[in-house]
Structure formats: structure tokens, C-alpha cells
Image (cartoon, rainbow, N blue to C red; front, side):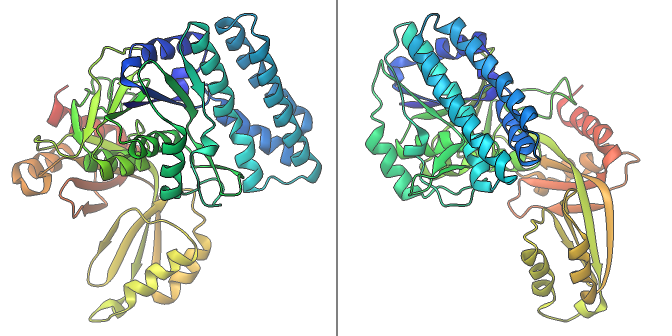
Length: 444
């Protein structure tokens, strides 16, 4: 059996939903489970709905709900004309959404729990339409609420699945068989008490591989709007190519450092079960795509990614010399403020590390100051060069640094996994460096 996950761009309107159903029907013999995201930008709009309601602007919140409602009713009418049952189901969902929004407006507060409840409507609405549209053309389709499958903790906004319970629920409720289509939601789950949770933005990929792992799927397919994982961001490098195969480790590094085709957590359940994950293009279903698997024989540079909006923090102190406990005290500060660090480089008297730009550094700098002199450099970018044996090949390293040209490198981090060389450069050097590196390793 296979799990097929379709992203928001793949189900953004009735035309795309028809395409999704066409793709799924060609795979019915493989006993598919279809996992869907919300239509288009619905989740972003729902975030604004909650924000307006919390801010006391009820009219603006309800106007956005009407916009979402119009898009879904249009898709429903075009895909399933004259279906009173689907119209009633959509109406019930929108009545519930308005009720929640009104409650947030009245108390002027949107808790993480309430936010998850609001955001869950995107996937719940899209899967209603997809299931009805599949049935309209004679497919034996069944909608299963993901909140009865994915059991999580109560960390609203970024809930962690409880894998044992989740796997048991999935195996109990999903019995994939040829010529039958299960439809369920990505991104959402629930606590053991049935309270709606979300897995964090991009969590639909995670949902798909959780389900695939529980059912021991033959493959998980991530359907999106590009032909697969590319050698670089095609929006920056138009000549970027599709990578036919890539390892789990390489894909995870690329995902974390800016390649947004797959969600970083997607890889984890598949790794444990050695399930291949395919990234494919909904608008070009016959294109080869990319297969993410346990190992590949390819070596050398496979892809180059970037992550902008990075801040560099450096702590200099002579107390580091021949001392123990210094790094523990330093990282305890970041732990206290719950701030994640990306890159770390050390010398005898200094430690440098990077954090995201939107982090409030004031309390961190204050608490680091007793340890030494703290300096902060903003507007940096991470360039991540991924490939097996990159660090062992002097010729590859020489080509990398030759390609940098006049762009100064502020920091270098060598991954212990031997698949990642990371450079920190000025943010305005990001595009020239990406283009130069891509030209050196993949041609113009």
C-alpha cells in the first residue's frame, strides 16, 4: 500500500482537486491512503482570522471567514454539483468556525489551544470536498478524521505524536485494500482527551510518514508543485535540476537549512521503517521526481541550500582556557530562554553560534555578559553544501572556496556526519554565492 500526501498548492481549487483525484484513481490497485493539506493559503488566512478576533476586530475576522467559505463552496459546487449533503457538512463546519471566532472576540484572547482549533478547519474542509468529489466519479472513498488517528501531547501549535497509541489507532481504523481510497487530514491530531492539536506548520508531511510507518507502507509520496528535491532553490537558480535519489540524511540537512520541499520531521518515521519517500509534482505526474531512501551510492556535492535571517552571537573570554564547565554555563542560557542554536564554532578563547533573526536577544545578551564579552552580528545567511564525502575530498573543498570569490566567509561549520559543510556569509552575498557554487558543481 502507499500513502499519498498532497500539499496546499495541489488542492488549491477545483481544477487541482480533480487532478489529485485523477492521480489517486490511477493508484487504486496499490490501496492508497490520501493525506491532504488545506486548500491553498487557507491556513494563513485562518491565522489572520484568529488575530483579528483577538484584537477585537470581529468584522475583519468574519470577512475573512466569508472569503474562505466562498472558495470552498465554489470548489464544492464545481466538483459535486447539486450535493445538498456536502453543502450541509460545509455549513456545519463554518458555523462552528464562526462560533469559535466569536468566543475569541468576546474574551479578546486566543490561547494556543483555541488557535489549534481554528487552524484545524483548513484540512477538515478540504478533505470533505475531496472525499465527496471522489465519490462523485464512482470511487469507493472514505473520510477518516485524523484526530482519531494521531494522538499527541498537549503542546498546542507544535504537538508531538505519541507514537505507540497513534500507531495502534491507525492500524485499528485504516485497513487499506485495493480499489478503496481512504482520505484523511495532515497537520492535525488530538490529545487523549480528544482536544484538537496541530503538529506545526508543514506537519502534513509528518502525518503522512507517521501513517506510512504504522501501516508499513511500500512508499510515501509527497505531491507538491515542483518536480522533486532540486540542486538548489529554483526561484533563485532557475537552472536547478531535480535530484533522482537522495539519502535520508542529505534530505534532512537540506530541509532544515532552507529546502522547503519536505518538512524536516518527515524523514523520521520513514527512517525507522526504511520506507522510501517520493517527492513528485502534481502538475507533472509523469515526471520522475526524487526518491528519498536509506542510502545512495552518489558522492560529492548533491545540493546547495540557504537560510537567511540569521544572527551570529560571539562570546570571548580568557576564562575558557583550560577550564571546564564554561560551555555548559553558556548553553544553559539558551536553554533557559528556550532558544535553538543552529551552528557552533569554538576557539581557545571564543565561542560563536547562530540563531534565527526573530529571536529577542536582549535577555540572552544580558545573561551571557557575565561569561565574557558578547558581540552580535545581524543580517547573515547560512549556505549549506550537502553531499557524501564532501569533507574528505580536497578537490571539492578547493572548488567550494574558489567559488566564494570576494564574498567573505564569517564562519565555517563542518558537520560530523560528513555530509554537510556550512558557511556563514553576509545576507546580501547569499544569491551571488549560491549562483557561483551551483555553476561550479552543476553547470550554468
